[in-house]
Length: 85
Length: 161
Image (cartoon, rainbow over all chains, first blue to last red; front, side, top):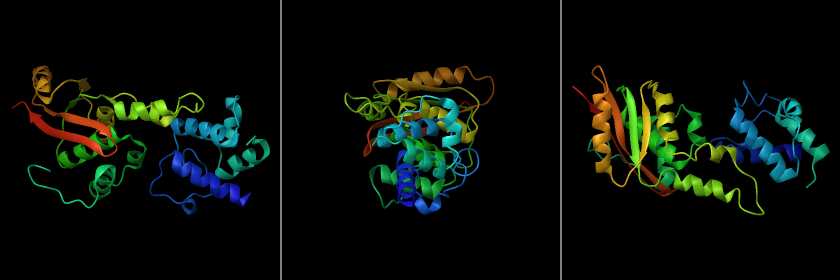
């Protein structure tokens, strides 16, 4: 799991162009939206695309997004259970 | 160049824009999400608007948002269909004038024209100025980007008094 979290942080940094950031700067359990990383709705779409592109996960139900994208850890847990690649 | 004086930089191309952003702004993380055209216009406006305020933004170029358009197109080619929302939002050239207006709290008109030359922008700016009812200042200029390392901007503040 820790390896997946590290990989996911690197993918988030690249996808969202956080040029000044390293994985260590991202709190695994901090909220991704609002406080914490302060992501916006476009970032949310990028994360959805990232899940599809990198892990073969298609999120069809927008309601579950709120739970999945609560933090890097919740994302990683969902990926570990549902990934197809 | 700023007001005819050269600005010393270490980097070239888009890295130069990041260098200038860090030196003259540095407090606007959204900069890193912008495409090169927006980064160019943003940095140029940062340099020019230090201590100045304007009422409107009128800009132009010849190639619209072609660089970002092609980057976006690469994300929707056959066999690799992962359209990037972050790229998509910059597939219009007038986004740069909006970004500048947000940054500098400019509540007047913002517009972006696709023209053959800078000279064609002058009558447009004059017309824009004629519409102003009180002493006004317009940030106007050319902002062209054809690649990460191929861009040109020339901005000026025009007052109507």
